[in-house]
Image (cartoon, rainbow, N blue to C red; front, side, top):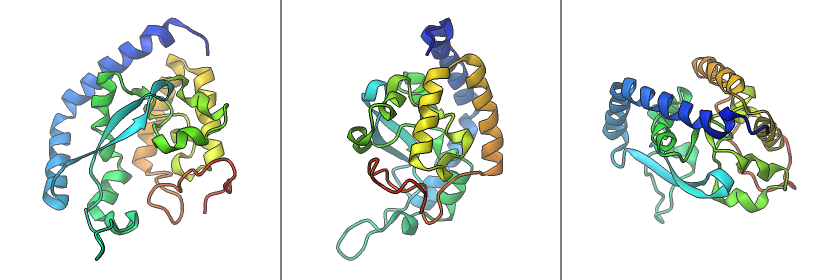
Length: 211
């Protein structure tokens, strides 16, 4: 990855300006989504979870809540597919649940474009090459997202993430953002067949294809 001015300073400036603009312009929409979540799913309106950021350092990623707190007779949460109702599916299909991540971008924990932040549990499961995805800030959208999203196999996702790390540029980021808009409108690649989002990454010995 060439250490151009954009990589060193421009990308962060771009993130701050665009995320601040989107937060201001999108405030009415975010308030509307928050009220919808509160009315249908209750509190808390936001879901937060520790995710690995730049160089694997943990940060608390925020999203709008999309799942109901429904438990079985023993008090255990039901599977995701049983807790994701109609409202949650709509929010996910339009990526509206991702809007609070703009705050993560403004804080400097995420970028508008970069490999998606996955689970902390995945860190020791990566190969050395796959772990290179953490050489840049995680993003709201990324090269893997506009090339298949959750319909991709894990090895393909990681290959695309590492390709982005090696080719990061303003032109590429702008291209990804434009393609993201079209993908959201088409609702492409939201989930793998049989999964709410995607199967868990168990390491490089698991089957490479989606179930």
